[in-house]
Image 1: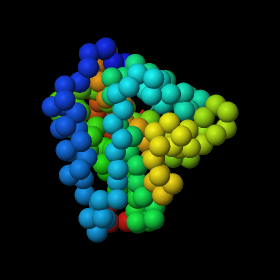
Image 2: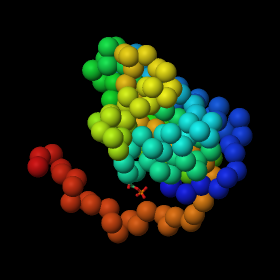
Image 3: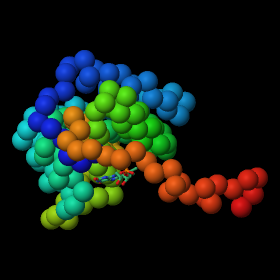
Image 4: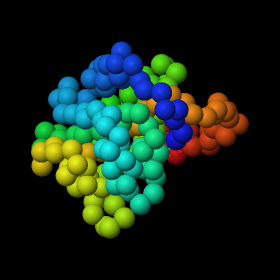
Length: 162
Ligand SMILES: Cc1cc2nc3c(=O)[nH]c(=O)nc-3n(C[C@H](O)[C@H](O)[C@H](O)COP(=O)(O)O)c2cc1C
């Protein structure tokens, strides 16, 4: 979902989103992730500008959750943080909310600065943490058709061997 209404999220909904993230499985249950909840308009606008394309919808979202991992704890930080991010998205859908993943890792701001460094400056997290993505969440601002099952690529599934 890349369009949101101006309606704020309730604190109960935000708590449920974070609860889902904190329940995520992680390798060796290392729980290396961290989450920064952003609801200040100026910061949401700054997140929207941390990429040339693909992040503009953060400016109109009421909430963004920055999902960070810690490569000094585990080489599975990307996997751990990805699962936590998706848990937030599944919980959002369950609450009837819309969400979108904004990729931060390996992405650049319009001036060529890594998007991760733009967020580090904006949000003040320590050097050992790496932001993987930002999940923006809000009340759905448009209708979306359910996934068209005819588009499922069953040919990508292989039995016992390629
Ligand atoms: C790893 C990953 C990175 C993504 N990065 C972005 C992004 O930077 N900006 C964005 O608007 N959507 C991003 N998305 C959302 C995808 O574009 C979206 O999941 C895909 O288009 C499927 O959309 P659908 O739910 O409409 O089928 C990302 C999704 C994933 C899984």
